[in-house]
Image 1: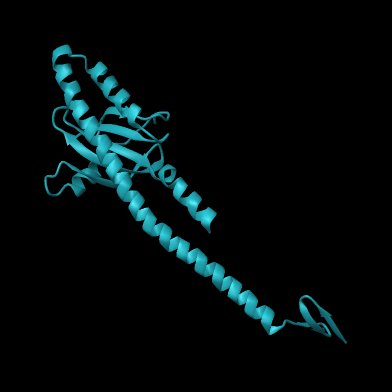
Image 2: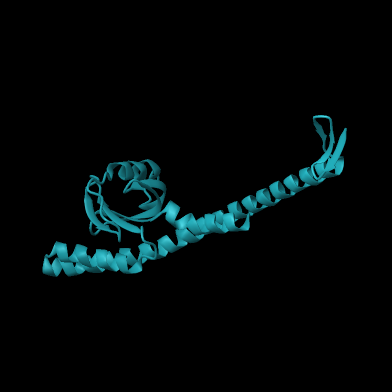
Amino acid sequence: MQKNNLKGLKIGNTFVIPVSIKIVFVFTILLLLSNFLTNFINMNFMNIEITKMLKDLLVKDLKEIYYFCNNQHEIFKFSNDIHKAVENIEKKALSQFLNSKSVLIGLKKDASLFLLATPIERETKFNGLDIIKTIKKDNTSDSQEGVLQNFKFNKDNYFGIYKYNSKWDIYLIRGEEKVEFYKTYWFVFLKIS
């Protein structure tokens, strides 16, 4: 006995799906897959550009902080109030931050914390030793600045740049949390797809 319905033709207990439905189904899946892959490739190219812009933004911020630190060092020479100088540097950094997990870290060469500016709650235990090891490993050519592709702060992954400040004898590290920075990137990707 044959029954004809939307799914196809039923002969006995077996459905026979028409070839046209199979073709439409396969074409739809391939179209969706193609769209998804094209968007993914475009978003990856955009990710490269976003990372370049992030680096440029961090360089600009770090440059301003670097010169501000030098000015605060000159003021410190007259006032001998190191706490006030550090507080001023932290306030200046906080005024520049655009994201809620932005960070400026000042690390001495022995990995002890000199200053820390961040709008989030401070980590009780911060291990700057890993960052100093990464800087020393990457710093093979006596360059006093560079990029930290990945470092941990408050158990989150950060992207950052660093520059050595000889007046304070510290490494200034300006970083952005990766997930927070790229969340709009993923939002756009999911919305487009």
